[in-house]
Image 1: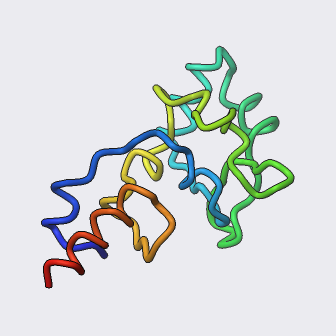
Image 2: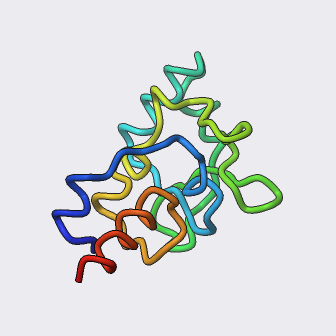
Length: 115
């Protein structure tokens, strides 16, 4: 987990790097309702078209593109940003991010140079 002083300074640049990382975007029931509504689909249709069983076999996850990036990533932008899942909304505050986010990397480099 990142230090609170770093998190207070974080400002997302919208680069989309976090949407390219491997792993699963796990969905809550509320995420499914929100995304289905945003897309004008009923929940069953959304689930059938846009989700898969997560590796934990206990919940659903968003589908990925062939390269492992999120299926909703278009260029550097999330095409469902207003309805993105809670896991995405919580970045980087509830994530363990060792490196790879350009904005966090800059903040961490600044912190190292001060220490």
